[in-house]
Structures are given as structure tokens and as C-alpha cells.
Image (cartoon, rainbow, N blue to C red; front, side, top):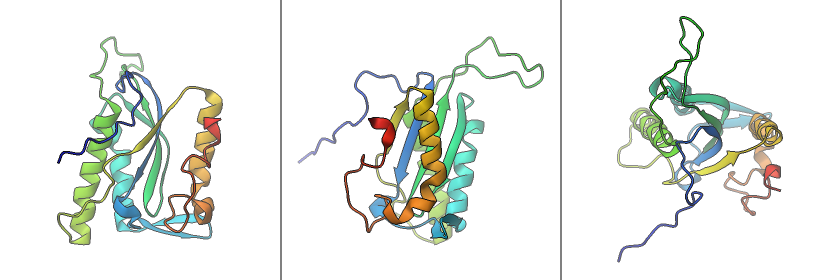
Length: 182
């Protein structure tokens, strides 16, 4: 029997369109793979450093991507991705007249998940085990006030780990903590 997965993306929206996106990607089964929280600060282990490094290299792979706030947590990541169609000419500082090849948010995150999973599984000496959940959460940021609130949320996420719904010991509505939805 084929089970059809529910599409959680905004119907009819082009995710290669220039915009600002908040994303959360969780590990499979909320497994704590990337480090620990000590005194409200995230302490990355080798797997967490790989995830962080892979994220930071996304603009090299996708010229239409710029990155903003980002945090690796023990079992998930939060980040802000900016998609644009033009990039600066690094020699002159002028905007290029030719648009860059658009990449969809899903393509970018699929690349991130794949590359980081291969490298994390290699250092953990394991095969055929997923690192990431199949899907991810995304929110299209439409205002400066939302952007500011989300940046603050990302920055402060480690200090709120004890009450974080992605902390496996905590269960509550997944959107209770996000003030920018109201």
C-alpha cells in the first residue's frame, strides 16, 4: 500500500523566488548527535562542527544564497536563508546584470542534508542510518519585525534548551514558542 505524504509547503508558492526563509531541520528520531548544552551555550562535537561547516558553505555551492542567523542544537538546526537572483561582481562591487540560476529552497536544504549526513555518518562509522528527518519546517519571513524576532529566537535558542519542544523530554504544541506567527 502506497502512503501519500502530506505536503506541508505553501500551495502555489515558488520556493525559488527571492525571499527570506526561516528553517528548522531535526535529526531522525530527535537523536542528539551534534553536541550538548552547557550553561546556556551550545558546545559542538565533531558532528556538530561538520553540520555548521556544511551550512556555512552553502553560498559557495548556490550563488543565489546568503545566510543570516544560524544555530546548531543537539538534535536540530535553525537558520535563516536569503534567496536572491543577483549577486555582486566582487571585483567592481557592482551588481551583475545577469541573474544567477535560481535554486529552490528545497534543493538547497536537500544538498545541505545530504552532504552533512554523508560526512557525519563517516565520522560516526555508521552506514544506512539517517541523520535527518525526511522533511523540514520553513516559514517565509515577510516583515522586518518577524526577521528581528526570529534572529533573537535563534540567538537565544541554546539558553532555552530546557523548555525547547525539540528537546526530546518536552512535548507541547510545536508553534507555541514562535511569537511571530501571531
